[in-house]
Amino acid sequence: MKLTARNRRSNFEVLRLLAIFLIVSFHSVHHNPIYLDFSLNVFFVNIFEPFGEIGVNLFFLITG
Image (cartoon, rainbow, N blue to C red):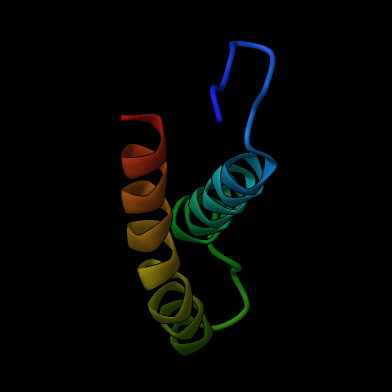
């Protein structure tokens, strides 16, 4: 099956959107912390940090 420029695989596009969402969620938590409690900030950053790493790696592999 030949793929032309018009035929795009939607599963890769959905995966790319997921990677973008993971990167944006990491940046929103990491660069704009919630100023409620210091321990709460550390908790959210520790939760979302792997999402950023996974998102960057996925985006790099899909677009590269």
